[in-house]
Length: 81
Image 1: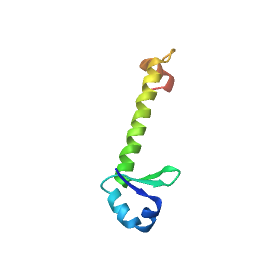
Image 2: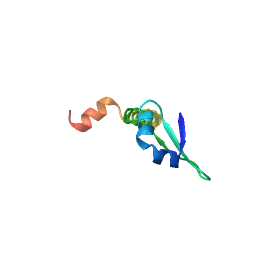
Image 3: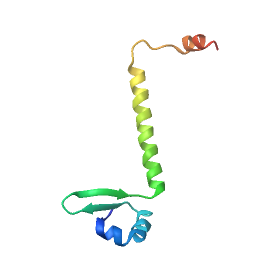
């Protein structure tokens, strides 16, 4: 991951945005440390999808562990199908 100061990023935004198409760019600030990370749209989309997938897996696991589950037949009957 590339790392630049906030002032470097401000002075060369287009260069660092080009770098972010290949790898994340960490933006740091004196006294504060890490302020932001710039990534490509593709990287962002993949990360967001991975988080959503993880939440879906966690939700499914929780649903499987719930008591009082309804069978497929009961659900179909309740929905009138």
